[in-house]
Image (cartoon, rainbow, N blue to C red; front, side, top):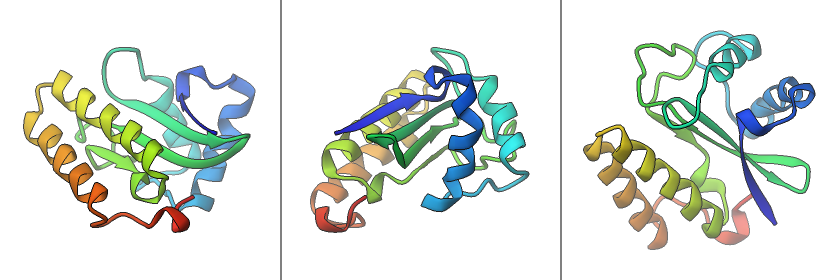
Length: 136
């Protein structure tokens, strides 16, 4: 069973270890390293961007869903949303994309929210998403 956990809810002594594992599942910051990411993630507050979510199966990190919104302030994350939703089982992918849609709608970024809806529709049709057997 997968769990999606916000960075803020991860025990302090586990945060650095989790960030170090990100590269093993294919995520590298565009600028800086783990310390740079951690500085940005420590500033996240409930109800606004950015938000950083991690997907775990048992205790193993298998995914991420980073909701940024403002790319000018965060050089390490120069995209509005960064995730590996396409690598996740459909039930996890649906939840992650739902989070993205809600996040962008709340920020008033309806074009991006609509893009996420279309992307999810494509995933449901098998376009651009791995088969369940090939998912993490």
